[in-house]
Image (cartoon, rainbow over all chains, first blue to last red; front, side, top):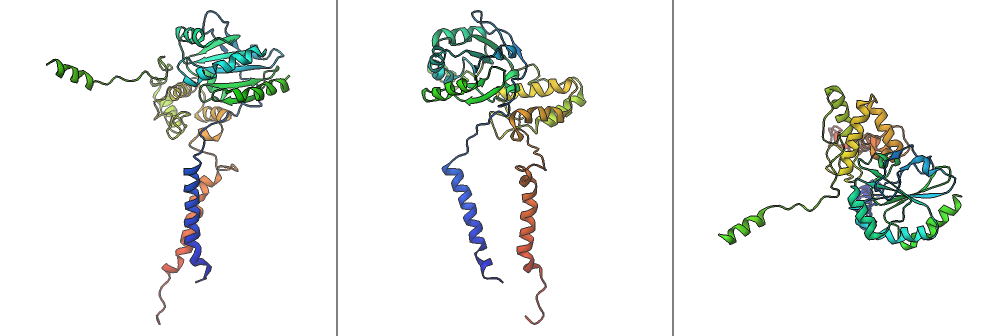
Length: 175
Length: 138
């Protein structure tokens, strides 16, 4: 038998060990990015979630000006964490539309009273239908949309302070 | 007696409020009326990955989002779409990741199909000496 073949089991063990070790040291992130980035916004029309704000449809998101589409829910804790950042973006002159995921009008109204309302329009998506259309897999998520209604970027998870310059730049570039 | 009652109440389960108070989507837990369509939907649901519990199929998962996906699958099949159309609708949005039946002819997913065959052939090649008849003079 070839001499080098003797080393094969050890090499195989090494590969196995490396695979297990990397899996333990760096667990894979389970974030699933939407394949809709770069594509036009799928057509949708959602009813208004609360009385204070109008309904949202895909045509509202293609009015010649870049916008953000934020997916949130009153039952989602990271959504509370990102509320101040959304208010800061609104102050910077960004138009933010929202989709409330699996939520009731009362709960949404309470959430907005408590944590602020940075939204121009809010649609309610009670069966995640539009979320599935968008390739979104949770809350909160924020889509950057250019003036022609093309999805430019998907931000998964809550928006933190350090994400704001990047989002503002994406909105600027989308003009 | 009072203490016993208190202990008894402590035994009851008080589920922590779920992620969302809304009822599930219409067809999340309701079968389609047409048994053939339901069978087709069911077969597809077992091959679609839940977005929340990523090692479960949407047929297995209790996550609200999985229920919403089941409802979408059933509604689309009831509307006359084929299971493959529904699958590609989801793959278009989430990538091949969402399907437990990945394509054979794809640059990323072909090893899932061929790696077992390659490993088996390699094992046979490694073990080939063991199957040889021992020489008479040994």
